[in-house]
Image (cartoon, rainbow, N blue to C red; front, side, top):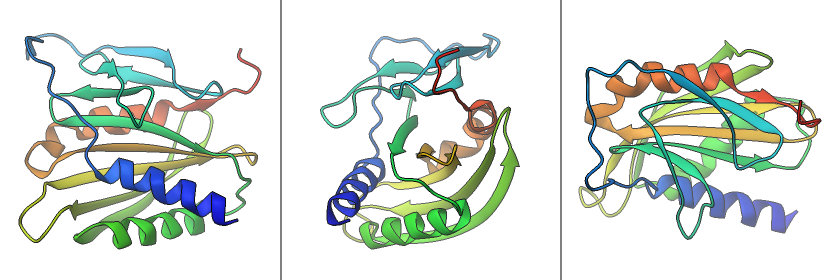
Length: 182
């Protein structure tokens, strides 16, 4: 059990650190239509539509995630069964609160995805000493097939979040768990 929480806390810390990158020389044309591209994610049982404006990248901590300017979409898996996604989401929020300098919960909602119900939490949080670190806006989706809980963290800086909101929600609605690989 301690190993499970240690892994969860490590993952939460990584998500809170703002694992996003600016890709030098990568033009962002506003006139291009946004077309979702169906991708198998770093987790072999999870699939989602990633907006075309997001680019696959990696870091020392995360093998594969997606970025667009200051926005990122990160996928994680907790291989433990879960019967109550809302309780799981609230437990995750408590862990975020422990790691963040400040946290303001905006909303919790259930959205219907293509094949699963997605429990979401939306919040704004700050990192670092007061006024020292970034302030980020996140919407985190929790999806389960009974065997695992998948966490999809969609975040950006507070000032740019609304420009990514629909992309984030589209990604959350598109998540599909398929352990057979079909």
